[in-house]
Image 1: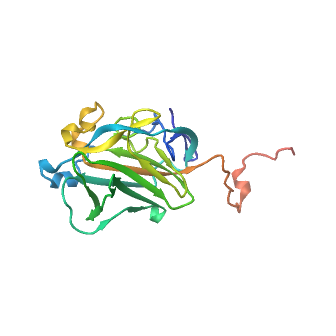
Image 2: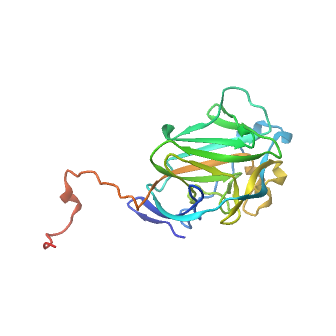
Length: 248
């Protein structure tokens, strides 16, 4: 699907999963960088982790027609993870968009602690542990979340791009991403694993060198079914070129 632009506003077709999701556009694609996360570099080989293709989880999606308000993400974050105990200040969630939204991770026992060190964020995981990505919207705005795990697009298994379409995060609601999407009705759960067993290492579009990192790119969305009032213009004639038109 081609990404159409008009006055820096990108028209996109999204698929809603609880809060929504979408197929990837064919234009303006940019592959995720081949990043060796600092957490992986600092960890021993035995501490490195990836994310494998897990059990089926019911997860239905529907189609919605929304537009991005800009062609570039308004915020991007990365979380690195290994089987290593981190020290320092731990938080339950990361503040996004100046507090308008939050990101956290959870397993079957509850929220996973997120550690911050020199501007980087880390999570301690263990092989065999299922986890989920959780986004909470504290605002009246609608956002799109383009999520990647180990450099893989969680919607279609391709090499991730920040310009892919993603899940819709509706106002004052939660979005929970539980796995790699395998159909309109199910996902394969995210499970921490050894890098050799990771989906990225066993996918022609992936790379074992990208294991250990989770990405989120965030866009604000405009819903055409909810008209927005335009601000008043001091010089409205400047936007009209040509001569006078007859009355209608």
